Length: 63
Image (cartoon, rainbow, N blue to C red; front, side, top):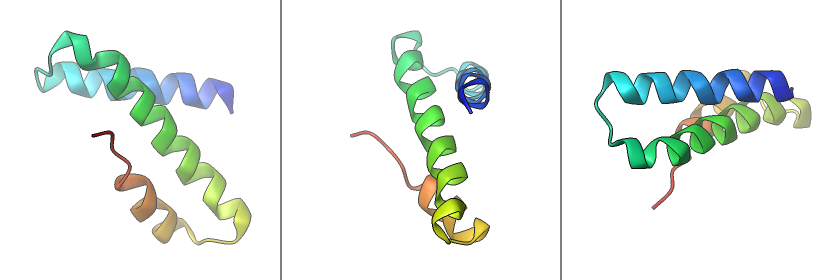
């Protein structure tokens, strides 16, 4: 699970770099990606289907 979180954070940061997001926000973007992946992977354990889990994970954001 930890390995998946690290890879997901790196992948999210890579997409942010492609879309020219300011570098000072990259750490926050990585954390959001890791949080979204953990929600997506843990919700099916509680009985939620994969599609609603993806929807919930997609709406995670930081104001």
